[in-house]
Image 1 (cartoon, rainbow, N blue to C red):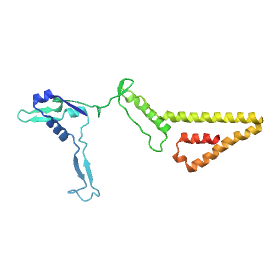
Image 2 (image 1 turned 90 degrees about the vertical axis):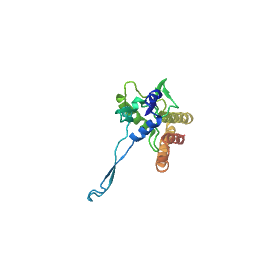
Image 3 (image 1 turned 120 degrees about the vertical axis):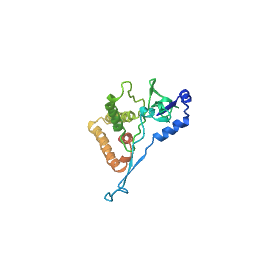
Image 4 (image 1 turned 180 degrees about the horizontal axis):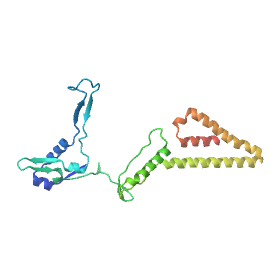
Length: 223
């Protein structure tokens, strides 16, 4: 919440910046409202609970109505809106973000350890699509950078390479042996070696190795 003080109005009303700061600290706080179950209440209450009131102000309108000074002599009141402009702005103005030449606010999302990158990316897109109808008319979202599709492309490339390697093995073996029965042996050996790799990886390193690395290992084993 940004409070832009107007020096001309403050000088005309005789208000100092220290008064504004003191008013903000006094009227924007979270106070304890007491306890439940403590003395002098009856002893039937087993537990004692502390109560906190939600007395903080959050909207620009609430900040505008903060009382900076009162004059008992004439009954006048100086509000914060009389000496300042209040608006909800950026936390830090040292850096500006733009997407396609338009002002934007970036939201960085990091994958939790052990989470599936593709499922996470898919869930985020589905959530944004559900929230899009609730956005204001002049606000939309765009994903300028993401690393999830790299995983998908890597998986597809590994699968294509695996199929190409299988075809090349069949052609080379057949050209040298000129026998389909002899060619069938390496064709069957490749799936058997992959299945054997699956079994060992499940019990040894499957929980700690990402999927693209596993597929790369399976491709190397097939060679």
